Image 1 (cartoon, rainbow, N blue to C red):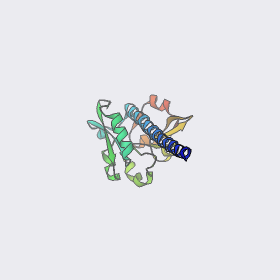
Image 2 (tube, rainbow, N blue to C red; image 1 turned 60 degrees about the vertical axis):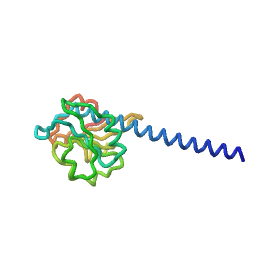
Image 3 (cartoon, rainbow, N blue to C red; image 1 turned 180 degrees about the vertical axis):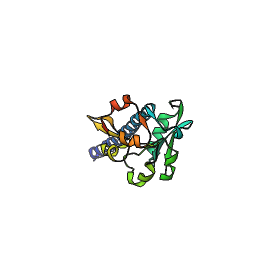
Image 4 (cartoon, one colour; image 1 turned 90 degrees about the horizontal axis):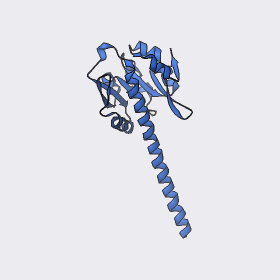
Length: 174
């Protein structure tokens, strides 16, 4: 009986520790992607009419991703502009953003029309995101986070991407 109780306690501890490490791993992944997005902004040029005093990086609907990104990017500047992280609850808010990040669990089709607006850089998950919907798509290659770039879409939106950033991409779609 005592042996069974000990096994049960150890099993609960193992499950608890595993869930903590999974949460930590997801938070670390979000921090890494936040750093990527922040660094992307250093190598982008937006149309003149979309320039504001601050650079708005928006997260679609995912509160946990938003919190980590906000914490990671607080007090940062890019190209002389203060970085502001915002949480988007609807597609109507997209027009106030320079960069929109759509986390893995966000269906692109929900906001596809709003995301086509000029000057908005879209970042999402997977190579198909960069091929079909967005300017940047995060991909995992050999257990490392990399990115694809849709240069054709960036040009349509009036956003220029530096050759330095293009050279770092896993794949560039024209």
